[in-house]
Image (cartoon, rainbow, N blue to C red; front, side):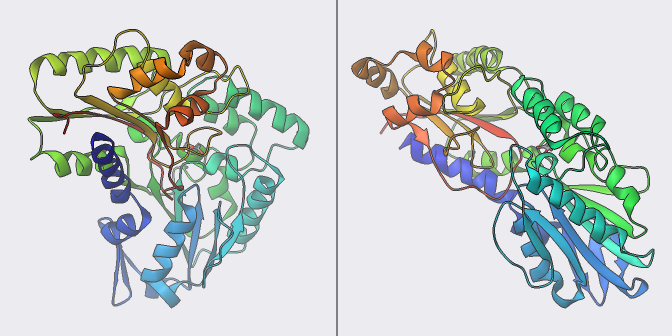
Length: 386
Ligand SMILES: O=C(O)C(=O)CO
């Protein structure tokens, strides 16, 4: 029952920031006038309209924008993770989370297409999280092998995305706004934020963020959480978005969440608490899991939650680390199951194997990739058990 409610809350949040809603809520076309958020562009003034899209939400963004703008679109490219085609926009399947040669190919394709445009063309560039790994053109002289070594080492080091992307920008010919300099076209960037505080210098390694390109944030975790909160406000005594900027390592995050839950537990009979952000962890072993399931595992350490509390920790993209799950649940029954199955939490933590742990218990949250990405969610629910 609580698992079902948590799952519903998750999909409420995620659906609000899926491409279909984002495009419908932020872009419209009437009599050749394209309205983006609050700015109007007269398409008659441009010789071509090009759509580019990069990131985990790339394909769905491009697909939805095609549905809206149809043959107004002259061309473009969606670098995506799907092997799918579109009518007006070319697609190219790249890789994530590791940079591969496909990411290099995607980088070159972007440069080739964008540099062929003139100042009379208009570009809508859709940027979502994951873009940094999906497109790349490393600085001259850096071999693929060396590039791979550097990027894999920083990826596993446990640094946050800001630091990670600063390193990525320093070894790239397209990141840190450099991609924008390859084109003469008028460019506008529409951003689905997967970074704390919607920092445009960090999202997708700021491919297009130089001074001349307006950026519009069209989706972020705040929008997602508000929708989830609204959907449950009549069913519990208290709802609260605690933070949209959680950026601690999994250990400190677990401690922080526990303290807050304890406080609410002492004061309310029922509640829904919403946390969002991105925790960090050092990957020191070869198990299966990601930061969301590791956080859930750490939440099980030391004191138990009281019996009416249940929790979901999950990535909004539907994928947690190297596992095929989005995250994991916790409820009162998990403690006795752990005991019964004689599972040693510390062993699984040490082996970075949180997914195996939750799968054994049948407490993993496994869904398909959602096609969007606004970082991670932690939903805490207190309701009477039915
Ligand atoms: O840089 C990326 O690709 C991220 O996921 C953050 O936006």
